[in-house]
Image (cartoon, rainbow, N blue to C red):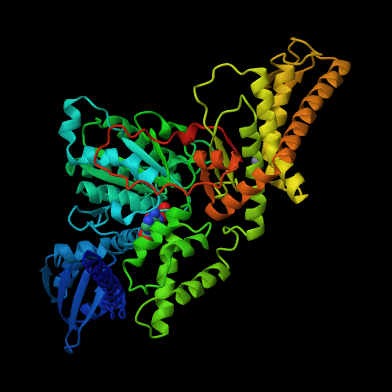
Length: 621
Ligand code: ADP
Ligand code: MG
Ligand code: ZN
């Protein structure tokens, strides 16, 4: 509305200014001043109306014209001498507003235009004309938000971790009485489409509190200070509505490391980020405002954001595994009529690498196929066709692992796991998966039984063998080598080098420290040689020997346990993720038990459920 008025105002101003130009008396100075004076002297002029420097002349013949005087102070006297009737009129001051507009018109026009452009650039935000600094957060109030945890499937760990927040939001007093400190911020980290936004909405929906949603990029503007004032505004709003949730999607848009960019242009983002830090520090943990942020790149975030009191709680929302996919499919299948022959478990098996959003899309595409075929319910054929369509679609190819790659990864990870299980001192293997995660195609998790302070030589030797297990398995079983092991090698080499040069764990070189002292200088690292060439060669040979012996150990373990590796590979290809119990079954020569059904997690009691420790466990990719 305001915008319309603005547009008409501008159009009006343009017309006014243009017309003013044409409005000037046209006949001016057709007659020169001296001619006029001559005429007057000759008695040809009957009457003159003086208005400022304009003279309205009425000659005897009844015609009319106007001229401007050059500023002749004797004029009136002269005219009267010639017998001309002279009248004076007040100076031209028609109407203050019009004349003001006349002078200010062009300026106003330019300013108006500028405002107009600004608003356009901001995407025509709602609110008053001066809403630059207003936050653009959308408010979804507690009554219109119908998303609950029932709509989020397949990420039970993440749900469990955030459920505490729901409890708090429902009854903040209960926690405050006990002096409990609730995190200010929760960071949901995970690949796109895994349900981060969904979880955030579900928290608000379960707790029945308002939900402010904003995207990190909404803070980023070309004007320095705008983002910061938006942050301030948003937090103010939220506090008025507390308890509530602020959801910042794609927080990496504002939260990148400060000072990382080249040159200028980062001021705005830095100020915005700083303001956010200030706000998060500023509010009491009992103010009832909880910030939930989402990103798929927690690695680029400024470390200051992750400090205690800010986003101190990170919740990983990963791609769903086979059971998760089944559950997500079931959630979305509730919304369309489904033929009884549709088997979600089979579909889940056939969709490795699909995210929650992909699966939602799969159900939707299948429904479209069914509709096109005039069916009354969506059947398996529709699903298969939709799956093909999505797989063939150009955009997914890279993310979905090809069958061959899955097999390769299964051998690689089984190699790590079987070696780890066969060595006495190694940490227990907690989980093996061939779900791609980040850069890794698969992961073997080991859970330490207790926190280790000291590293012991025999354990480190075993760790070397475990690291080599992946590549050794590829070699033994597939007779191929993949680049997937490069990170394993880096870690192994570094460990071997440290063992020899830092920890004095080598038999032949003894307990001397052979590290070059490195110093950081302006020009990068500089190392001053403290080791002679000959010793250096000995050190290298020693590292080499260490590495070779442990590689050979890994190989021989795998050769002796061929059946176990094959069994584990089969289990992984079928189930993608196997847990400690299944791994034990395989190692003891039994068929692996079926995966436990994810316990119908009863939320509501936040006490007791220890979060999964996976985040800190050593993992071998
Ligand atoms: P993200 O924010 O992680 O990129 P979204 O939360 O926006 O992903 O997910 C997009 C859509 O995908 C959701 O609206 C939902 O339909 C579907 N979806 C994603 N993850 C899940 C899940 N775990 N359970 C059910 N649906 C999901
Ligand atoms: Mg999202
Ligand atoms: Zn590996």
